[in-house]
Structures are given as C-alpha cells and as structure tokens.
Image (tube, rainbow, N blue to C red):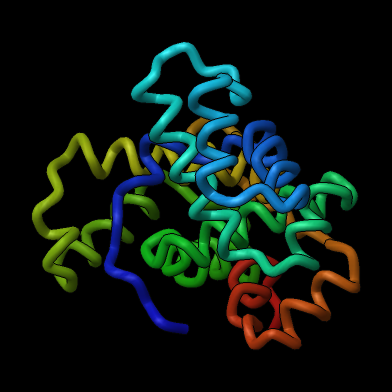
Length: 200
C-alpha cells in the first residue's frame, strides 16, 4: 500500500453515510468532478446550509469515493446496509493512512484479542505513539487529537463496526457479502480485510 502522509481531515467529516450515497449515485450516473461539484455545491444536492461546509464535505467525500472501483462503488450504493457501510469505512481507510493504521493496530487487536473493546486509553496510546514517530502528528495539539478520537469513534459506531458502552467502543465482528470480500482480496487489499474483519 502506498501510504499517504498522515492527515487530520477526518475530524471535520467523519462518516457521512447518507451524503456519501448521494454523491456515489452521481458518480455512477457518470457525472465528472465538475458536474458533481456543481450539483452538490451550486444546487445544494447535499442539503448543507453553510457554503464553506458544503464545499468541504463535497470535496472530502468525492475524494474518498474515488478510492472505489466501479464494482465497489455499485456495491456501496446498491448492496446490503452492512456491506455498504463496510465499503465506506474501507474507502475512508484507503484515503487516510492514519485511520488505516488505527484500524490495523488498535481495532484489529480488539477484534482478535480477549478484550473486545477500545478504551479512551487505547485512543490516547495510539496517538501518543504516532506523535513520537511521525513529524506531522508531532505538531498536532490536544484539541486536534481529541477531535480525531471523536471522529474515529463516530465512524466505528455509525458504520456498525462498534457500539458505545459507557466510554468504550465495543467492537463488532462484521460479515459482509462474500463477493465484496473476494473482490477486495483479488485487487490486493487483503490488509484492509485483516484490519476490519480480523481476517488472519
């Protein structure tokens, strides 16, 4: 996997499932980037009042969905809800190296270990280790880290990969459509299946 530099963009636009499906529909209708942008920004297809927020959300989600090939984009739009939400998390992880690392290092461990939940301490430990090892993360303040943790928790809960139990996130083992799992394996993205499904 070609790793992109770490980013904190998730803190502003975590999951956004409904809007992502709307934009996926436009992409499946073969609209190009400018046409998607025009529809979302100028015609407010995404139903966001703030112009700045509308622009930001449209751009972030479009970039995420570009990570999906035609088959996965179709499965995201038309597939069963569990598989569809899984595909969106996969797209986010493909687009965001830090989130992928979190899934692989923390979520997967909770999925395969005896603990089966992620605590606030687990989030803090993960980001502290990244602060020590990465120059970009080392410059982020407490607020950014806090917002990122919140964004990650939001994604896990809204996608169905976790549920809130007090201050912890209990991880949920998910079963997705076999054709999607097979396709992700075939295109060389097995590590995402390992991170999200606990595949050995």
